[in-house]
Length: 370
Image 1: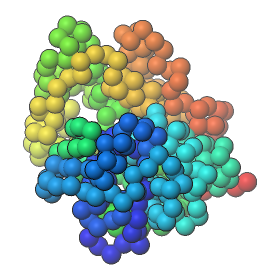
Image 2: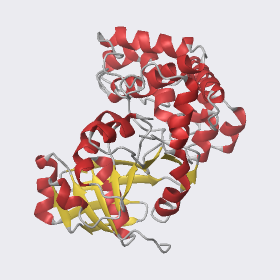
Image 3: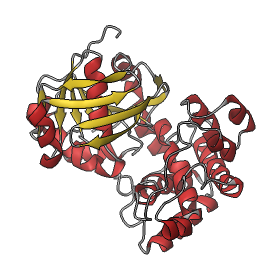
Image 4: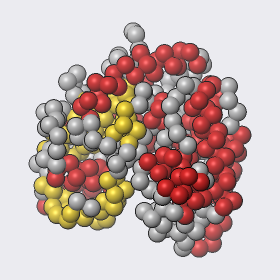
């Protein structure tokens, strides 16, 4: 482990991502303080004093000195406060952390990709000039396999990293990169929104396989069986619109297949093809992942409201049409029998209703001036 100004890390979230981060970072020598509001998730860990893990870096037991449902206790003395949760839970975790956050602590959200939602929440909690950083994706391919166990299939070797405001990205990168050397510095949190891979491919692929999911209860391989050439073409169309929006806003990003390759999930041959179908069919890590058993699943419930809808909103802000993305949103809502735009991550939800493109880009770089 490289020399780090971080010795103690508060981790918010005790699901697959949180417990995996707790286990992995403990093996690297960091003191971990695990927090969750879910007492049932914490109790088994408290009883044994840590988490059992099975990972590429070995099998073992990670002793955790603090496992608590009290946010102040978890954050006391921590140099890094790490939020590890799905996007729809960011409001809950950030609201819990905000009253105890100090100026010398770094707030790190992984995965983030909720754009200006976190600054909006922090401001509503009384922090006038919020500062935080995030990655586009979780550092691990992982899951919590039991009350006291987690399994890490892969530790990411490439994560897009950005800060808010953008002018603070470098300072925060210099801290977080000593904990996660795989982070790659990008300009700001706009550039962590576009590389969120799940939001690119989950909604169109899941929509195309809706009948198969309902007929079989998910008895097929989601990526290998479900992403056929025609489904791959739909993913490619979504990706072209995503890239057009990013380009119009001046955000540095890359095509999905290149991103997938950089993250270590597919082959050089698939990369050269530039085709989503090839990327998934040549993906060994994703090959055996089963389909969800029902449509009420995060592939729709998270990746549409906190993925596709962000692209659509940003498209309107930038004056770029997103017809394929908009149709996927509409058809996914019909398939589920609910309006997925109702509680989605819109500009209005981020406190940016009516914002101009110029003001939006200025906020991303410079933050708030009041």
